[in-house]
Length: 325
Image (cartoon, rainbow, N blue to C red; front, side, top):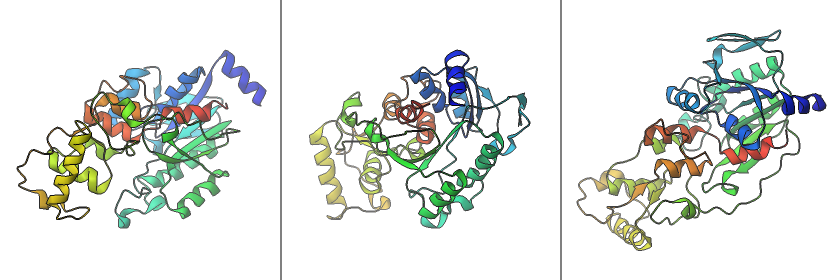
């Protein structure tokens, strides 16, 4: 079978099914490697993600809701129609992580039990069993509970490899990857520092914090921006220079009475200007953190781009896995 697949790749291209496709990161990674794609079917329901995908890859076949996808006797059934597809060379997905992630309150971290979010894994696993592709890849957060990780491994018949995107990118992003693609190893460390990819300003971090959808909902007042950054760790701020960062820390410690953090309400009515000039990453910098091509999300606003980039894969990590196709 491997010989046949190599022939398909070199002559006609591969056929791909991407579930929970987002902005079609799988397509970018395949293109980056020079692997020709014959057909790429994408199941996605987020409008702004589909908009980006269509803008960059108009030939991708959008098939809608993953819950309405099935495959039988060489035919792919979707809410957008049915398609004759004799076989799939590659099936990829990263089901939603919202109820897996350590970033949410503990009482909402119910993992696979939430069938509308992280539990969509079961739909993807069903489709995988129907499609039986030559190769598959699934991605999700490292911070999921071990019990959820073990259930997924049992369903897929493989153990995950953990890769942190910081090896190939300027941002932290620990993720599990389950795949039957052979010989997947850790990528070589490219030593890309966060400071290296900034258009301007200073960062106190070697690497940006993990991109998340919360980056699409930025606080607007400088003091609240710093508070979220310094006390929660869920966003990344950029300062005018190193001295500016140091005076911001000093001022925040004064406001918090010497504690590591205060509450956001403690900062209501703050009228100083010490924090003025702090900023979030711009759209180009957000793309660089995920090793996305420059301008890939240009059809969106900055905050919309932060939303879909928080969902997406780090391209150079995926390319590192796909190179073994």
